Image 1: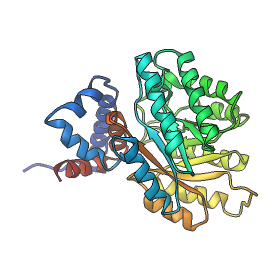
Image 2 (image 1 turned 90 degrees about the horizontal axis):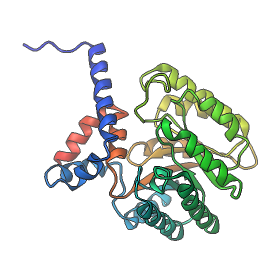
Image 3 (image 1 turned 180 degrees about the vertical axis):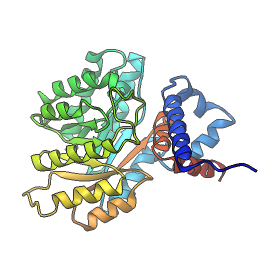
Length: 319
């Protein structure tokens, strides 16, 4: 007779499974092979549908319109990190430009800078990001730079800072997990553009980031969230954690700035009930929608964040 694992053993096993998923997500060969594999690809694609709007801009447009009809704003990202071909990086930028032209109002655009050249050359990323910043400015929508692994944080922030010299609508994402974030926020609060606060999902050593299971991560997230709320700076609280959401809601209740600078944001497939609850409380809300064929890393990281999602992925793949 098999003896059940104690609770501590189950937690450790879940943590190990999450680490494996995050490691697999970083394999740049797998991100191409898995979707194209005739046996595994269709199953993985079924699991991905919970978190991904589809593989085309048309799919994203349809999903964005349906979300807007519920009263929430939308943040759209075309997935494709770590592009290592300069011509392809420029061609991928054109997809973002089409999104800036075609998406309805109240849709912002997010992107990984490594999708448009950062993994090749910082100047190429800045040139392509400048094209997109101009296109989003022309269509009156926000542009948000996504977070990447800590080895790219300095370069991401440098490109963002350069864009802020010419544009005031370009935001950036910061990760509460990184020990450096308090210092980064100090500098970012002096720049224009929305600051999007996430926990952070990348595989990082403990010398650089809090483990996802560490209670100190929730404390850090709340410290940063309260600092942002009190600053009056444009910001997004991007989390599905009910405890964090309720705490932030209590902290900002009673604050009545002339124009509310914050939003509550959740990822597609993970937190519509959170958005509905915060909208009922009178807060601006936004749902984060991703599309594209390069979904492997994104889906692995979403599943790794919660062990229950691995079981759901198995159910989805088998359905």
